[in-house]
Length: 253
Length: 205
Image 1 (tube, rainbow over the protein chains, first blue to last red):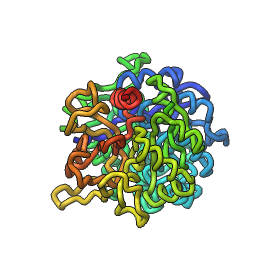
Image 2 (cartoon, helix red, strand yellow):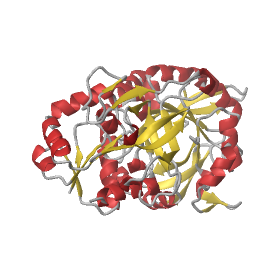
Image 3 (tube, chains in turn blue, red):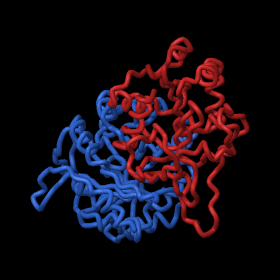
Image 4 (cartoon, rainbow over the protein chains, first blue to last red):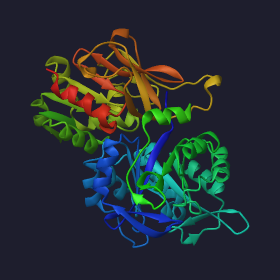
């Protein structure tokens, strides 16, 4: 049977991997090339790699680093960060990346999602949506690494992106990021009930049970996590791990 | 030398990366002179059927491929859209396929009770191997592979089916007809299972 996809979400800052808490306080967790090799050995389903400073620094993706990563990445890879042109996507795909994730630029230029989907197929285009709750508990969409509130409900934005041609939505909770308090299931459910394309839940996972809940209760098609796969124990020692296939089978059945 | 056919469609880099990993001598090329000298061929592909046929026609490689595959019987492996292009036609488009295998490419149709199944079929799924073949030498009972597709191949000759997969229905996941192999899944992104399968392909004589 088809198991929901479970994917480590790795954050690139410069040439190193970091893990954030609520999109702040980046802690260095290792070299991306090394981490990818370990995830290979652990037979990970799929990987997401997001360059979290490319857009803010107004630069293109680091193609050299991506190429070094893909030469050792024998699983599907989604790359995000700094993509603002079809040529950027073309270059990235040529290096052996399967999908690209677009965040800030999808808000600034929704038409770009349509053109990317037409050129490379919907299955190649992921739109990532970063969500934070207002003090009154309203879900709001943010861009520029959580710095700018665009004043739009993620449900409405997700629908717009589905119509624009996105193949997946990577739905990130800023409030839960790095907290390991579990996924924001209510927010995930609101989005998954509103659209038909797959939603990848992200933000807050601490255990395989959380992942099961994101799928069964949240309606997500896939679950991504950061801290859970790179930290170990209460003192957050860096140690890469990934659940065994049998455990994933158990949690989803 | 294994030649990965570059006709402007598909994730050629991943295929080359994995062939390097298994220690095979391989190159990406759209040069007919290089294709002629190939000991084995790989036809990858991601995207729409008509666009695939259009690109293949435009590449001017169809004649040399026919000579290699149909006359010289050079082993060829089609991946995803590459496999679908081997069939006679696809519901996705109006162009005829290469017609090298007696099969059609059809869209997933789900009955009401399997509602909720999303198209494309995307993610890791298990195979049921239907018959012995050098492509699956040394595999455990139900290996897992990575799939991304909305269309699948329906073989008219049951003997051509090497493996099936279940997604709402049982569909053909791997085929072999003489020197022509094809997989609907992406071995190049299926870590240890994909490494093994591509190694089998590179080592078969």
